[in-house]
Structure formats: C-alpha cells, structure tokens
Length: 133
Image (cartoon, rainbow, N blue to C red; front, side):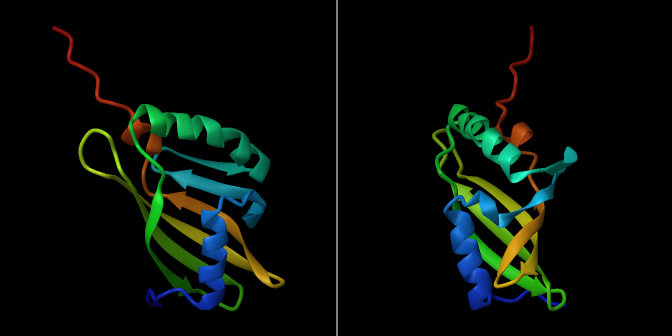
C-alpha cells in the first residue's frame, strides 16, 4: 500500500473535519498520542476542546491550519489519513503537529475510529522550566 492524494470523498470529509464537526467521530473512538491511549466519546472531546485551546493560547500558538494530507485505502471500508498542521507562534518557529486517522465508511460518509496524534501536545506546548540555582 502506498500513500496517495486524497480522493474526493475523503477530501470532503476532511474539509468537514476542519470545520470542527464532532459528529465525525465514532462513539467511542480511540485517541492516542505518545503519552496515552484512551477511548473517548465525541461529547468528551467537545468538553476538552476549550482547555486544549487555552493550552495553545498560553503557549502563544495561533489557530492550526492543515498543511498536508494523504491517504491509504486499506480495504472497501477503511482508510488511513495522514495529515500535518501548522500554526504561527508568538515566540519563534511555527508550531507543527501530525496525526493519522483511521476512517471507517459508514453508509455515505466516514467516521473517525482512531485518532493518533504523533505529538504529545501537553509536552510540546509546555514552556521549559528555568533551572534552579
């Protein structure tokens, strides 16, 4: 299997994902990052988003914009989508993050079954502590 550009149906799904639609996630879905793996409902995700945005704000990171996306069709029902996002940062280099989503076709659309964030956001957005004298 190889990574390819997005098919039209996957591109439309990702455009809806970019708009913040929580109904695109299965209930529950598996959320993973380098530090943890948890089953999460879309409602739990929605409740956590304000704290996540506050964490980005404290780190001086603006809104994320998707910069690249590619796909791998696994079978008739499942697709891996790899994506990267970038945001301006008030102090230095832009912030970047990547993720892989496992989508499952349900009727005429997809649902996100697994969201694998390749960045530990809490660690990446926490400023380094000053060494104690």
